Length: 398
Ligand SMILES: Cc1ncc(COP(=O)(O)O)c(C=O)c1O
Image 1 (spheres, rainbow, N blue to C red):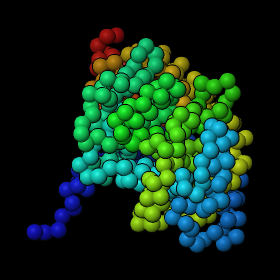
Image 2 (cartoon, rainbow, N blue to C red):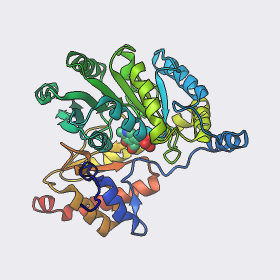
Image 3 (cartoon, protein in one colour):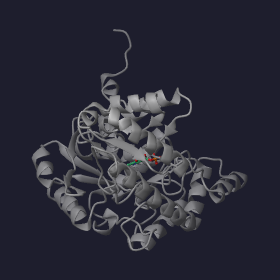
Image 4 (cartoon, rainbow, N blue to C red):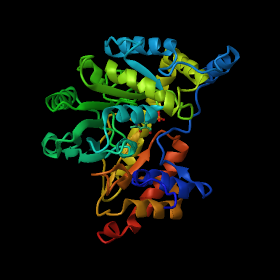
C-alpha cells in the first residue's frame, strides 16, 4: 500500500474563510475585511517590551504552562475584571494563541468517536478542532428572536447522544456579535452539569463589548457563575484586545485536572508560547487599558457606521452586534455566499468572509470585520451597496 495522508486528517475540512482569502491574496488592491484582525499595528509599548525581553535573556525555553509571572498577572486580571479567584499555578495554562488553547482543550476533553455540540454560526476552528481530535461536531444554530440571537436549548437537548462529551460556544460571538446573557450562561452551565459535559467558552472577544455603561468593561465570563470544580474551560487570547494577532499568545483557564494535562500535552504540540512574546503579553496586561479604550471607541463608531450603511441596502437584515468586531448581514435570497463573495471580490476588490464558512445557520449571510480603518470601510460598503442590486433576487424585486 503506498503511503497516503491519513483519512482522519483528510476529513478535517478546509477553512472557507482561508479559501476566499487565498484568492484575495493573489490580487492587488483588495479591501481586506475577511480576517478577524485590524490593520492597526501592535502598540509601540508592547513591541518595546518584547525587545527588552530579548535583551534580558527571554530567548530560552519556558515552562510548558507558560511563565509563572504571566500566569500570576492573569490571575490578578481575573480578580479585577470579574471578581474571580484563580490559582495561577494550577488553573491557568499559557498557550501559543487562542486557537492552540482551543486545540489542546478540546484534545483533553474528547476521545475518538465522541461528539461535541457547537453553537453556530461560529468561527470554524472550533468544529475543525473537534474533527482533529477524531470526534464529531454537531452544530446547533443560534435562533434569531426579534433583533437578538438566542440559544436554542430544545435543539441542544435533542442533539444529545450517549457519546456527547462537550459543548462549545463563543461569547462574544464571531461572527454574530451575540453576547451570552447571564441567564443564557446559567442555562448553558446547567445543561452541561445535568448531562455531565465539558463546557468550553471561547471568550477571546471578552474585552470588545459595547453593551456597558462604560466602554472597557468586559463581557461577563462564565467563570463568574461556574465553580472551580465545574467541568468548564475558557479559551482566551492576546490577539484581539491588544492587536497582537501575529504574536501567538493565548491562554486556557480550566479545572485543575484538565489544566495539568493540557500543560503536559503542550510539550508535544508547541512546548510553550514564545518566551519574549509572553513577557510582552505581561506588559500588555499591565499597561494596555488606555489603548484598549481608545480602540473600543473607534470600533463602536465603526460598528455604528457599518450598521447604518448596511441597513440602507435593499434585502439586507442585520441585528446589532453586542460585542467582537464583526457584522453578519443576512442577504435576502442568498443561497451561495461563497460564490457571492468571490464575485464581489473579483468585480469590486472587496474581500468579505462568506457566511457558509461559519457552519450551520451561516449560509445566506456575509461577515465583515469592522476593525479596519474608515478609509477602507467606507469604500468597501459603498462598493457592496453598488454590487448588491446586480444580485439576482434583489434585482428582480426592483
Ligand atoms: C472566536 C475565536 N476564537 C479564537 C480565535 C483565535 O485567535 P488567536 O489564535 O489569534 O489567538 C479567534 C480568531 O479569529 C476567534 O475568532
